[in-house]
Amino acid sequence: MTGKKKKSLFKTWVGRVHLWLGLTSGLMVLFLSVTGCLYVFSHEITNWLRHDEMYVQQVKENPLPVSEVWKSAQDFIGADKPISNVTVYNNPEKALVFTVYERSEGSVWYFKNIKNYYSIYADPYTGKVLGIYDEELDFFNIVKMLHWSLLLETEIGQPVIGWSTFIFVVMLITGIILWWPKNKAARKQRFTFLWKDSTKWRRKNYDLHNILGFYISAIALIIAFTGMVFAFTWFKAIVYVAASGTIVPPEVVKEQSVVADGDKDAAFNKACSITKERHAGADAFRLTPAADSTGVINAYVQQHEGVYYKLHNIQFDQYNGKLLSERRHEDKNFGEKLITANYDIHVGAILGIPGKIIAFIGSFICGMLPVTGFLIWYGRNFKKSPAEKKKSLLAFLKLKKAVT
View 1 (cartoon, one colour):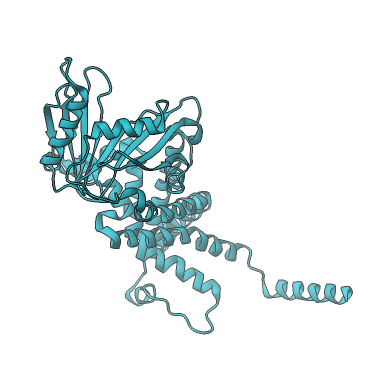
View 2 (cartoon, helix red, strand yellow; view 1 turned 90 degrees about the horizontal axis):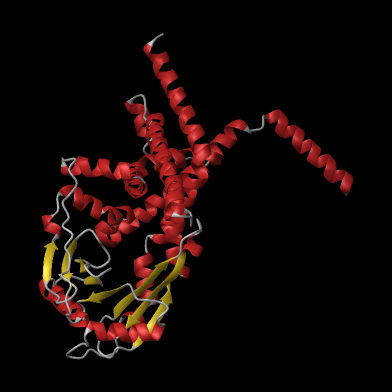
């Protein structure tokens, strides 16, 4: 067999793989692309919609202790909905945000597994509740959970999403192989749309599938790979090992509180003050109370607004507010930093608004690929010959004449 025939046979099999994988996963790729497009700007849109609740009307010199505002918010929403944590902003104009989150077990359906999920916005200077949002029914949260696990339990929905994404990666690679031109002359024609007035829609559709698919392939692979980090622990481990250069997991110290008769509210307020002093330049930090008698107060510091790649973790004694340990972003190895940045890379936030625009366009084109690909397949397999078209036309005219 000649080299040319071998190459042709290779591309034939690649084409078959590309076709059948595309037909089996096309709807899922379209679904993930649409939900991804919808979610990209969720942070900006939500902040705009909740502006009045997010900002206080008057900034005073001294805010109330966080524990006091916590009690006010808890009394407002009711004891049957216990608050889980509070987000404190260094911007004095922003409200405190308390989160209520409780799960219910026993169902594979997302809505039946959420008992309570609310965000409470409260004025840090007066303790007044500015607004409450039911996050379970929030549009963008539903879109996120559709994208995350099809509104199913993570253990069930995530593998479906993950393997669909894996198939999409194979399709991207096989698509590039099929696109790759034989020579320089052919290469020039595959980078641009060379359409004439006489160019038919089938050819235009073919070019859209191939040319846009090639240009977006790098971005699509980044989106797909970061999605697989969420879906598969084994893939996440591969990324970590490749980035850190070690198979040893990072050592994360879990401190414990010394059981005592201390004032827990005072300790919580002290932990808040220390965190604010040590990270005055950060955007915000989230404080979570101790889970049990020996647990600690955890503070998660978000350095920049709208992104999570730069986080610091601090632990405090729940009885006296003493700082037990701090793990800053700079202390983490590159593998940890990359995993932490995975979400920001996935949605494009790592590059700010320009990055989100790129992610939006990339997701939009990814959604186009299964549609244009299906039209190519349909046109090749169900295209009528000139004789069939003539026969259909004559039958139509005959029927029209009989009716009239």
